Image (tube, one colour):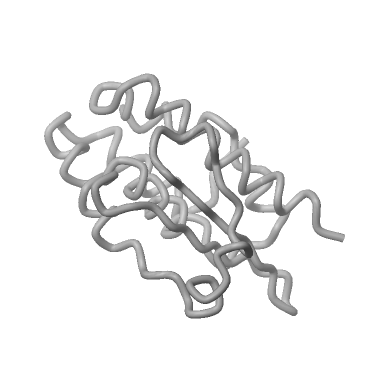
Length: 141
């Protein structure tokens, strides 16, 4: 299945880049992850933990009146790889429809060459983040 265009562009850039660039790009995405909106800071119970991640990682999804997905992520700054993956998801999927997000292959990130720059344990955490995000969207009425 084809990836959404923005996510496909990210995958293509990572895949065609040298290993050193992939790690630096992942770190750049981690730095660009926006802070949580006040409603999530004030009530962290609105966020769902992703326990499969090595570090404390939380997420929430919202779907607006037009059926567009909005994602919110919380991870400590000292966890740049997982924050970077969250940044990639945000950049590649934010504002798409629920159906478009649900159609993203669970292992799309293998096409990025990330297995050369992060550990298998981190890759499993990345899969868990996408899986949890999709479960939240699937559970919506």
